[in-house]
Image (tube, rainbow, N blue to C red):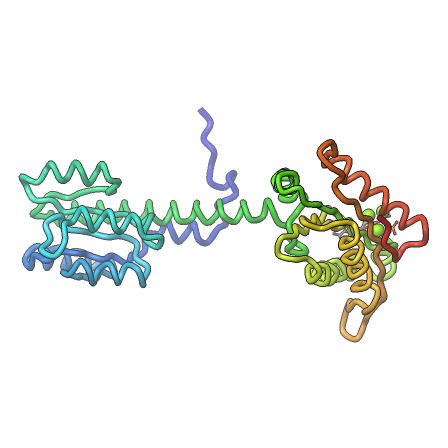
Length: 323
Ligand code: GH3
Ligand code: MG
Ligand code: MG
Ligand code: MG
């Protein structure tokens, strides 16, 4: 069997991952109101970790809501609150949903131990707690927590990247395609109009050729900042690719779409673009519009009409809006 190494997964150079594997001290909160047990646990933990003891479950919950911890160690037998109830509250709070929980159980309390494991408690220790076993289980839980935090962050980043355009921060085509169907269904259901606007920068190849690709990128960024100003909360704006941008506008009839199209055209042509210190250039864009045409229309046909309108705007001399 061939094993995929972390380098092949693209993780090896990641400092975060190196930190995770180094087993540095973790922040551990111990909730225990039994004096002898808690001082035993604390004396073992404090040598290796940043360990905090809190006998009062209510105060502990407040700490958990405000501060980050890597692990919670809870005695099941607490005066102020049932240990299991405390664990279930920890699981239900956003901040601590993924916090590992290690419970300390007294002999004879096996029924509650099973309920705890059932509830998603990560591991347990029988009391009296043995120091080496405690440290080993704590280390395992902290390591797992750090690794799963890392994976969760990576996953979130890759989801964000997959739906947004890195240069302009606008949504990308994939995001738009994913949401288009819902927008069209809403328009159909509410019997309201829906318009599509495609804007394309004029002679953009010339910008790159004359001023360089980096200047071209600055124009694209500035363009998308201006473009964004003319989108409303319900609109979906995206970079279709290259120097082509799109707005899907729910609740927008041809007249309103025409106004918005004109504002987009004007926001480009009315003010020069900065491409360096004391360096600006004038740029224009052409805009094509189309409005949803009833039940038998399709998204493809709608886009095609907007694209044809854009083509007409280009052919007629650019820097204009055609619907
Ligand atoms: P038209 O007025 O007909 O739209 O002419 P145009 O030059 O704008 O259109 P064309 O499609 O011929 O050229 C588009 C150019 O956009 C070519 C490509 O190199 C450039 N381009 C596409 N993506 C990027 C990008 O991310 N950065 C930069 N700087 N240029 C890009
Ligand atoms: Mg073109
Ligand atoms: Mg162009
Ligand atoms: Mg183009």
